[in-house]
Image (cartoon, rainbow, N blue to C red; front, side, top):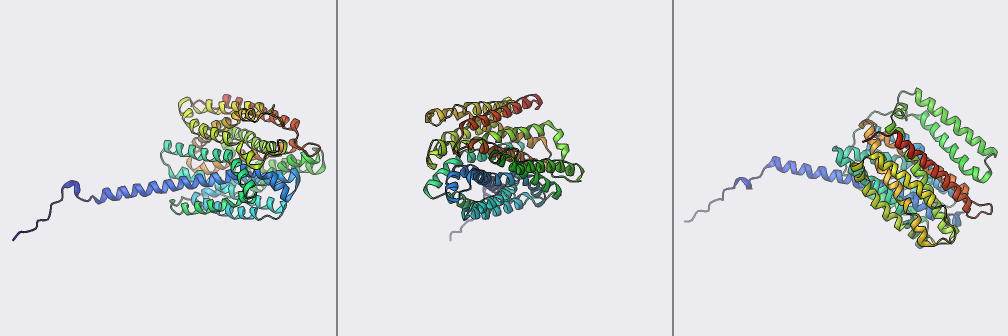
Length: 475
């Protein structure tokens, strides 16, 4: 009778529970990290694309809901103003509630507000729902960056993740006009907002896989937040309505006075409050103040340029929404490529040269658009817009990384909120400036007004480039 022998396991065939569990834990950690990065990218992308896509939809919105140039400016600035004003509190909220929870709150509100925008029956309701969208976006922005910060402990991996996050926002800003024009001409402008619904649902699904975020003590400074909202709202009203009512009109002067008084009150509150929205001591560090100034100037140029070009293509040249959107395709490609190159350039030659170069390229971009007219050849328009594609995409990743490294880990939410508050304020004021200058006496598109605005923005960029060169430390 033959006996069956059980084969002996070789050492290499034996199960090693410790090794297997370590591999499983590593796999789960990578999945959580990947989910956090994708969720952060999607959220940041959708709140950014909403700005540039809506810019292309503005003529169609004006035709449907009317409201004139001032109404269209408020459709854009209602979003960016709340985005900017609440960003400071949103950073503290992200620290206090935990990045994952704050991010989920922001995405949920943004998705619901987008539905309200799509169903808006008149310009007043649309502006109101855009306010809600902006408030939600203010929560999403710093929470998305804080989510990346907590998910990547290694500094180099974190820098690459932040670069990807920045790429997502820049590509969204550049690609938004293409998507906005396509949706507006084929489905209608309301589809621009409806697109946010499935994206919001996907982000919330991804957040289930993300590790719970730690909570850090952070006071919510109600007095500082209220005065910040009043200051920015007063400033925006004066800038927008000044171009239509006149700079010396009563409402404009009152609004400007409110802005100044609220700004002074904000500084007084922040100086005396134990845990302020804006720790004024942070502003003593040049690695903080200079990136804030650069972020402001870059967004003035980019948001102003997108707003200007959307109206230039459709109002002055008579292009359809799709045609106007397609004019931004080369720009989108150049922005993507430059965003990928920027972090590598910063590693090789240092952040300061990259930041300065980005602003100088942007200055050239403003000057290059001066010759634009109703009959400028399309190929020449595309060539003249190339510097606009490169400037911000070159500077923003380096500016963001510099600021993140300049503050301690517990202040990353506050610093992120501060940077993006300055950037969104720049965007809101750019729309106010260009909107007032672009509206001619007959209600048409004013080329002299456009050129005056471009010269003003070029001067601002040149000034911040000089500050960057003089005040930023060498790497």
